[in-house]
Image 1 (cartoon, helix red, strand yellow):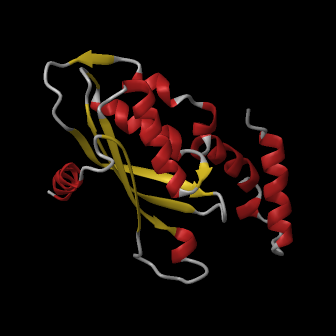
Image 2 (image 1 turned 180 degrees about the horizontal axis):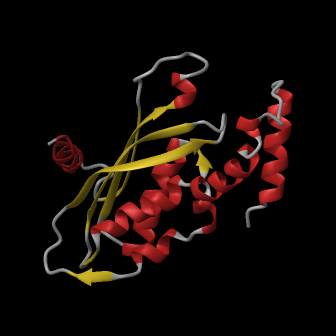
Length: 185
């Protein structure tokens, strides 16, 4: 579990390290605020995404299911700066579907961990693959990374796009294009 006291001590050391006066009014409660924030933005470390995918419903047809424009916020493990964007998920059921909100909850669980976008994309696809055993899964993430925007190369507005395909989506470009056209509508 999360150690709030270590987080607070670390924040205080960082503030002192950059030359701030940790006793000034505006910073007095900052270590505590950051510790509480960490519980919120890194809470996915202590959650099992498969819990959200357990409740399933039987379907007679196995047509493509797409949930698009799922807003997510995550933190880059290299710089501990945010990256944020939209997740788009598609799958071809194998007789079972989940509630649409469960797809968004799955994205949230994995996004609330320090990591790279490529791993986040794979985690979402793998969770759907394992829990639903669908005919195929396609997950695409589009995100802006603050480590690209506010430091280093400083290119605001640039986006990173990652995609993972499994099963019937892997080598079927017609099916991939169908998904992409649905996302772009």
